[in-house]
Image 1 (spheres, one colour):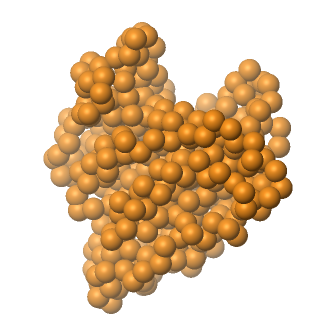
Image 2 (cartoon, rainbow, N blue to C red; image 1 turned 60 degrees about the vertical axis):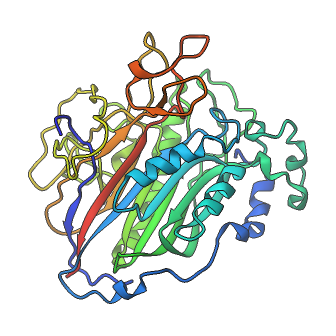
Image 3 (tube, rainbow, N blue to C red; image 1 turned 45 degrees about the vertical axis):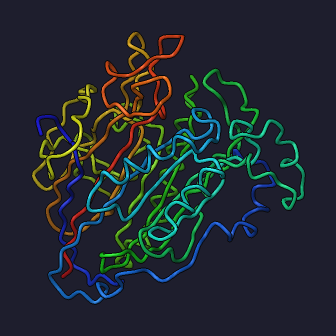
Length: 404
């Protein structure tokens, strides 16, 4: 490994005994009807729940804003590429966090992984035509029973084991939603973090996973930044009780904000006080930092993270507010280099050293049959833009937990 942050290696010692949008008003009425999104079965490998003190396990997770509507039209034909990327992370990921997933795509993942993962879904939009239905007007009335689920898009959480208690944490931000030009959004979102207590194969402890997508736009008056800052603070505050209860909390998703505190304060509520530069008021370590170690020596070299202002030099037991770009380049003449996707692990006593694997997925041919990791190897469309699976990078990481 020659470049910073390839795979996430997060080593912590816990001093606890670990046990095992675009919704309109109709979205709120749909909550009770979506119990079908949570499957129930007994987790395999349950014998590991009784592991004794000193047991070390790797808690592994991936997060990916797959742009399932705008980039993929709700289709499922390209989803095997995502399945392949998940499979490349070995041993297998315990948690899968996906954002901007059309309901039809959620059902594909549910079916594809029915023997290994349980999946859950929450909507951000219920009237979104880019997921495959040309007319979503039926979803805008007061009756949720006649909804066309081809108009739903939202967050997905998957667990290699059993999904437990579901909690949709309301993040606010539904009022006064503006686009980049300061104009009201025609399809305002509903913002909920999708969280579950989970019983995971091979992890003898209490774990909570959350998949999240924050407010997306960047207007000149800072309405979006204020909304995101409030949403992140609300989420972090709601997770305090879980951390105090001894759970390892993992949050993955699209925060739509860069990590540097001198640019925006959105991530202050997640980064710990010792995180450099600037610190924070949070209780989390972010998986992608300046560490340059390669835990398993596999996979493609990631693109260098070039946002170096300010450079980060963290204390030995802390981490940086930095990381590789998660926004995928559109074309050779329009480079996009910005970190807006995150994988957070809740605090624990002891030293923490982190790294990460973040990389774009381009296609090498117009038929989109093969994935490339370097833009110069990607095929291009008629406009000269790279063919890509998503406008976000695929992000994987882990935390090694010691049971005491």
